[in-house]
Image (cartoon, rainbow, N blue to C red; front, side, top):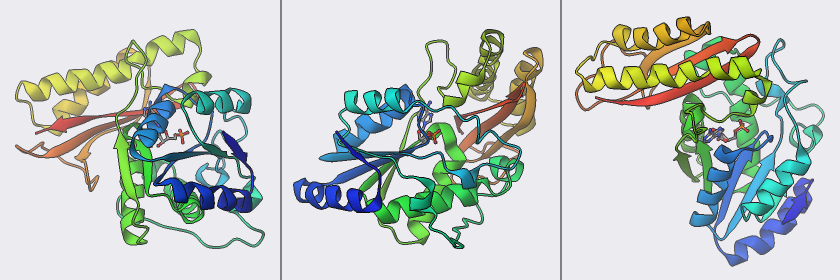
Length: 281
Ligand code: AMP
């Protein structure tokens, strides 16, 4: 596996790689876990070459968020990529992606509204901007993102369509711990006791899915099942919402045949966790 630190090293690598076939790309912020690895494996299934980036993107963190304490372990990340059969790991410095004087931003207007977009002002502008830069540098044939960050996935799909990147954007299912907690680099912040309480998020999603299967289509009732679990586990709600899976517009009912999504964000102490589930109407 090649370690690439600059755009010119990346370009040199890609010139050879493209001659061998399609290129898959998995952008990450590192502190890799099995969720990330599932994207890499899917990338290797779909393309001859898989490139992974690790970059903790400063512009997607708010001023009171966890940029400075975001977990980092490059030695472990390198080993994880190598074990997953990744061909190149791109590790840019901030100056490589944000040249001095950088003043250009990518704003995806509609799907960035509400949910995490509303609670984390500027977050999706940062995400869309860095992903557009990475897409412009790597120019992959296929790029893989996790459904764990459902709204982010819709932002990337819109960005890819609107800015004519022509990349095949693939959403991959959320990988969970054996007890159901969605894997996340931020789980490292949780104490043992918080880690146990965090299970209430997935439990709540499961309750709502069961209610829907039993014929409950009312969003307030479906969200209520999640809220009940959050309250019992003393998780502070950031949002619980039923939305259309593609547009992310809020729904008051899940109509028959509708591809809806139930999205949750909550705080355990200072740690903010998100999760979501499909609500197939
Ligand atoms: P991050 O490093 O958190 O920015 O995530 C990098 C990519 O991995 C994003 O596309 C995430 O959606 C995806 N990802 C993170 N956690 C999971 C998970 N538990 N299952 C599947 N994909 C994930």
